[in-house]
Length: 156
Image (cartoon, rainbow, N blue to C red; front, side):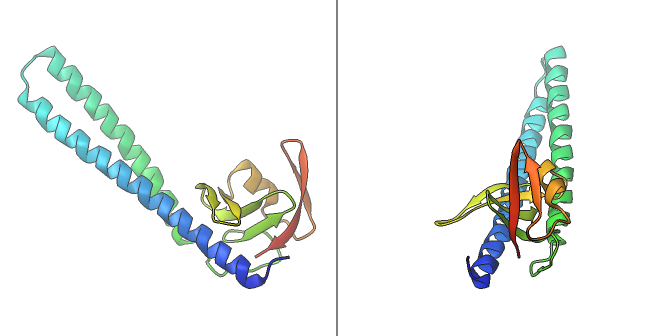
């Protein structure tokens, strides 16, 4: 069994990974929005009639889609800012690192798999199917996911 300090380090690394995930997506969306604004400006200078209007409309639709993605990402960023970094409890909740006999999960936002040289942790939201299954469970509790039964070994 790992030491509590190792779990705390892993939990901090998973939290930082989630923050980096959000920051990278935010930067990518902001760059795409700027590129669209540049494209929209250059479309304005064109005078090809219907083709010009179609191009502007397509750019505007793409801009709206990116705006929705940006809004969702801002909500994710807000949720991450509310994740307690030092949460230790008997029941699985937001901010916990949960070790099972199969995988490790960090309950925060859906950011995929974090890997370091020795560990792998799935950063998940409490709203994901697996998050819903383990939320509120205690050490020793079991759950079934994708036909496989797993046991919670540690909650940090």
